[in-house]
Length: 302
Image (cartoon, rainbow, N blue to C red):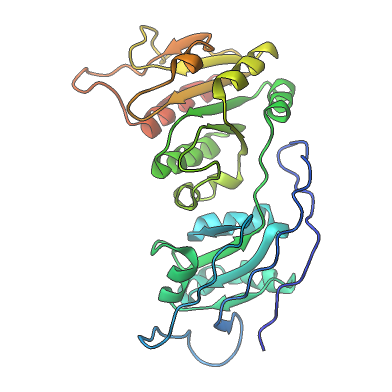
């Protein structure tokens, strides 16, 4: 018989010296997906069947589904206390055998399912054979983030209405790769949460940086400036070359909407505007590509 999820108190998460915010409470445990528990002896992984209905398990309100091999493994490594259940395919069970066994030893239900069943849980065919359901991820408040940046003379990114989940995911991956401390998400659509596909594209980067969200990025940046944090905006029309630019610390680098750039309110908070120089054949870079160039230049001076 398949184990049911244990009811466990939410553990405090240690995240790059980030102060813990108010408790959100433990989310109700989801119904475990049908399938062979990982590690059972009893033949090969289940094969897909046209007559078999896929599980209807979806994240309950306040829960999150993380899919994609690297993204899900990062959750297991960074915040295992948040994981409520795991579903995997036979191939990912082999790729992540040690992580899955460790999860089962902690009492986390693990089921081996078909690709079609995993798609039903993830809501996407891009699950890469591993899906975890978790408690809500931690978000820093602007005040908490300011404390971290000032104390560490750190670096953060701020995304002004960047909405494409592929761009957001690529930026998070780049930020984690270069050791950026945090990413501030402003005015996301269609909602305030981080899109599951962005988490997948980030390849674990969403777990390796502090995340902060704000409905009013202009006001948040103004408060950051009052703490002595430098605000630098990326603007394709600026005359200031980003290559060789001397960045102050702590710094927040602001990247704007894919087509419209920064809003006037956000732009007004920038101490400096910089651009990535190009040939002029096209007007600008994709925002995630520009982020990579600018972050590389920013951290090179550390």
